Image (cartoon, rainbow, N blue to C red):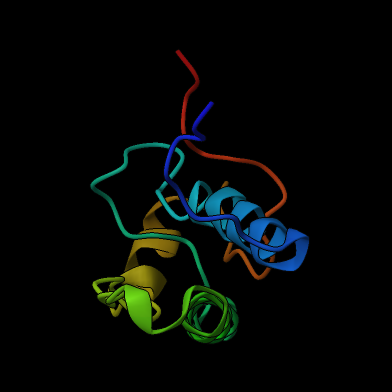
Length: 105
């Protein structure tokens, strides 16, 4: 019996992938996704660094048999955030993702 093809990732790589998936789910503005993200620059920097770590880990684990393209947009604090928060006093900057802003089906 043959086994379907695929790549097996370490638990570390899977955990980092899942963490980034959850964090990314909190990037969108909770009121209206097209409005500025509430992420601080510090959170953007941590997320971007984690993306770089995941890419390096995947490239080590998968090896030279595959090419992994880095197409992930690197985030930065939205330049409109101060103005947006002034107009929406019930909102605040997000420095840590605790809740997903993506609605589940």
